[in-house]
Amino acid sequence: MGPKKAPVKKAPVKKGGKAPAKKGGKPTRPPKRPNAPAESSSDDEGDLELGAIRAFIARLQALERQRTTLEGDEAGGGPSGVPPHAKKSNRAEKKAKLMQGFADRLAALEAAAGTAHEEPAGITTQPADSGPGDGRDDNACSRGAERGGRCPVSLPDAALPEAGTWSRQGARAGARMVVEPWDVEAFRAIQASIAPRTRVAYDKRVRAFLQFRAQVGLVHVWPVPPEQLMQYLVHLRAQGLAVSTMAGHLAALAFFGKARGLPDHSGDFRVRRMLEGWARETPMQPDRRRPVTPEALQLALRQLAGVCASPYEKVLFRAAALVAFFGAFRVGEMFPRSRRGPTSRVLQFSDLTVGASRVVLHLRFSKTDQRGKGQSVALHAAGDPGLCPVRALEDYTEARGSAMGCLFIHANGCHVTQFQFWAVMRRAFVAAGVPTQDLAPHSFRIGAASMAARMGYSGPEIRRLGRWRSAAYRRYVR
Image 1 (tube, rainbow, N blue to C red):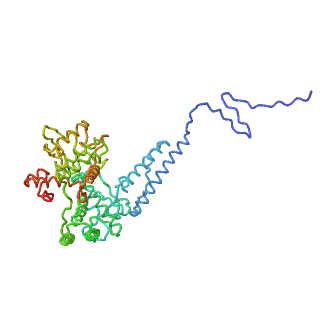
Image 2 (image 1 turned 45 degrees about the vertical axis):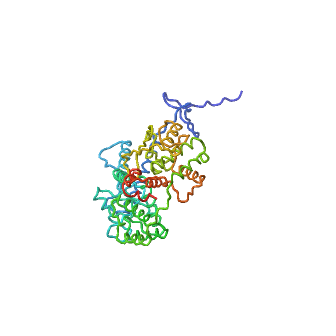
Image 3 (image 1 turned 180 degrees about the vertical axis):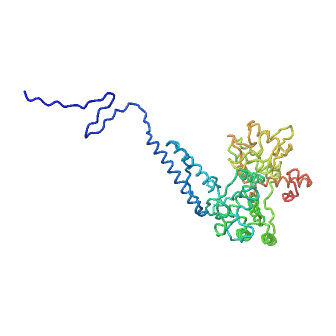
């Protein structure tokens, strides 16, 4: 047998303690428990909080640099946001107070810089005593302050300079301004004072003027100087527009300016005399639209069977054409402008009352009744069955059913639009051999006034027939 090895002495293990780690090796760790949720350590939480604090500091520094650029350096203007240490507190309390201080200071700076409320588009206003090409406005909000302390709502102008922050009086031109909720509601109510179609037309004309200013390189200031209006009128004249159309463009600019409390220069002496001079040089052209006669209408109705896609469509457009003619309706009172357009202002099925020898239609809105007081239009039976609106409506309602909604709808339930009505009727006139060169949807209303005049109706009777409030009916009589 060989020599015995010396026994290895082991370090004593204290009760309740851990075994000492082996020298030169990695410390032993207890095995992980299966399915144990991972918990973040206090160090990780501290890192997250420090990261949030660094983000606050970066935002504060950016706002302070911006404020220093706009207002100049001020003594003691550096943001600290750290509350004084009045008493000892633990780490968590210190972090909470620091975070709250940064948040309060950041909110104050953002409110002062005007970044909390931004307006969709900027506006550059021009003082009344400044020149036409001066884009500066050191007192841009002086008039707004007199009316309530805020600047007027800005006019959409994509070509204006990029808006910046609004800090105090004397900020640079093109700065964005704070808009209060009452400003938005007040301007919305002012816009609602005009008809929807007029509002759309005004918006289109204002955008055309803004595009002209951008192309020519004029200064984007409001109110519009008289010289810019004169230059724009010359541009419209070169495009061949009528004097009445140019006056409509001025009306659109005047409305948008007055709605924001700005002076209106469309009534300037030079502007008015320009329109007067052009009106004398080119007198108003007569209306070339021809009326729809009863004979032409009867020929067109006979062609609906070959024009329409189904018997239901034939009954539908027959009733619509006779109602438009004998009721002297505007097409905008009967049909929506488009498939997705509003339908509440046109004739509804609930507005129809069918009697023994007449039908009554309740007209909710019209060109001369924008507030919706309502008018009743009575259609009486005619001796000729081919031109009887009462019989045509009876046949149509029997095929249509009692579904609520617009009065004139297709078989699938979709309402008839103005374009669809005139497209079908124009094809019917062409198929009947009736010239359509000077015909238009308004020819039905012109035809009703002309037929009434031929039948010996007096002026007041024709006015009641077409719901005219003035002598404008005379222009419809051919």
